[in-house]
Image (cartoon, rainbow, N blue to C red):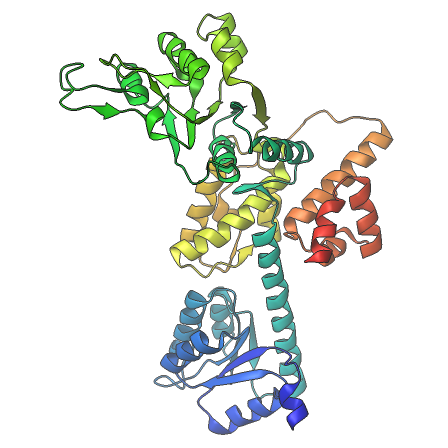
Length: 465
């Protein structure tokens, strides 16, 4: 007996059953598990918080409704609300198929028809426990790595991974960085990552959106003003640039800045000094500058709407963020992260996506980029009735693609292999065993393919985790 007590348990299990005899039989059947027991909703939630079981065996017919489904289904919903990742197996002696369908629709992992057959229930619990472990492993990998190339920035796109590596190196310097790309691609996230990775992270990150502030107020917003500088200036106010002292100043949508104000910003970039409106004192400011725009600045320069010398000062180091439609695998990785985030935030028992939903996310072009993806996932999590989001939950309008493809077979094969690897990586959420299964290859073959396509770093990270 002593050896059994010190042996590693197969998993953790909560049995919710009001029949004392059946409760005892089930405890005996799962003596190799850490078992907790309960017989009503209050004791179930108490044990859920205390034991944190991977799997719950839940009787459908419990007091005060032992002959009906109401008590069991209420406990099912309460369990999944409190711990969405828990695998709940409903048990019932009732033969009404509607009960089983209702339980599965509410998020139950499985439905078991009594009477209990020990080997069958042991197999079902073992599968549920293994699935829970795999999902927990995926969540751990996603938390530690999950395609997060920079703090908060998720990608497996080869060019973006190179960009992120360069940004990590630049983060320790004060070089001015310009990030361009469509709206919603994550430019502000890169600015935040640069700040967090820099020696200035203890200071503030102060952002100004040049497109959101009227031209008449923008100068005062940037540089501040002295008391009496203009009508309504009843006190001295420091500007955003000064507020960022010792930290990072983020100039968002800089392409919308008026030309006259560009000259004053240029002077600040050259001298690192500001002068408040109505003031006569030049004030030194120690900040790191990051700028972003969704506009083509070279075109604006040609049109006389953007100063070339200002552009050169802003773009000491320039980076382009490609839209989400050019990196569909990133859309799936980001979606995995978002569904967990919003399920916790909205307290909804959502586990993830159906395979059809993942395919829809990959196929959709995301004209609004990550911002549209965020809105789509949040709405779907809030409105979904099932544990896994479906294409109908996402409400995606999929276009018919007719992009030209290369005809060279070697190129086609290599590109297809790379896409398949990145998609399997996204769908499997970083789990190599699941990747190999999806691709229909052995793990040694998978690692060889990852190396050929310069994706082996992730495999090395997993093997060391």
